[in-house]
Length: 87
View 1 (cartoon, rainbow, N blue to C red):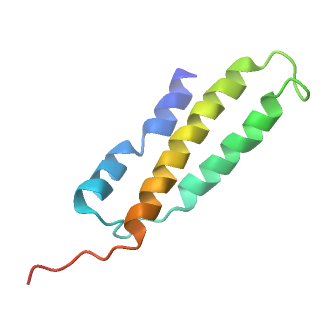
View 2 (view 1 turned 180 degrees about the vertical axis):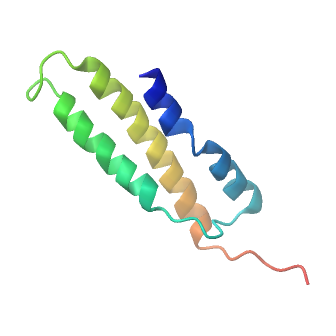
View 3 (view 1 turned 120 degrees about the vertical axis):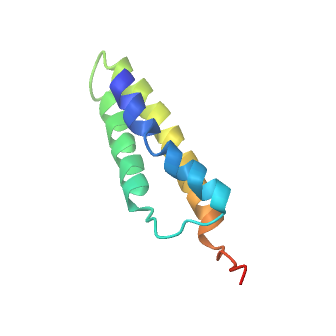
């Protein structure tokens, strides 16, 4: 779970850069959307009606789902803005 959390938090420096520059530049949202979908599937797999005694799978992927939702929200906020040239 600790390694999975590290994996979910690994794009954070890129999102700090996006927030500072107020633009997504050339970054694509596809990895974050697909990771979010992956977390949703693992949450479904971890439900008690599908798999018994899989609380850790459900909790870490729930946390990952929240983190990915924040990343996508940040991406959507700054994707419509064009960076103005100061020339």
